[in-house]
Length: 50
Ligand SMILES: [Zn+2]
Image 1 (cartoon, rainbow, N blue to C red):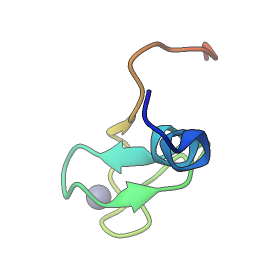
Image 2: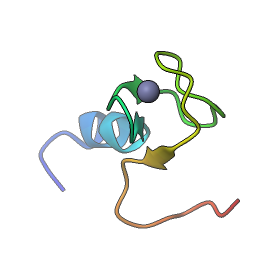
Image 3: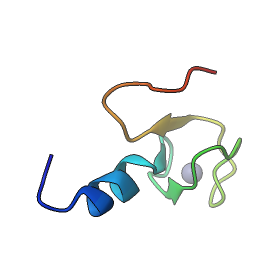
């Protein structure tokens, strides 16, 4: 992607709450901010299927 693969990876490893758009760690079941379960991975391809 860019010149900084580490930064890209860090960005892609983030989950974004669909409700409040807070960034969460991947793997969390609920948003840490609003508790919503509507999370999406900030990633183009889903590498890990759940
Ligand atoms: Zn949220």
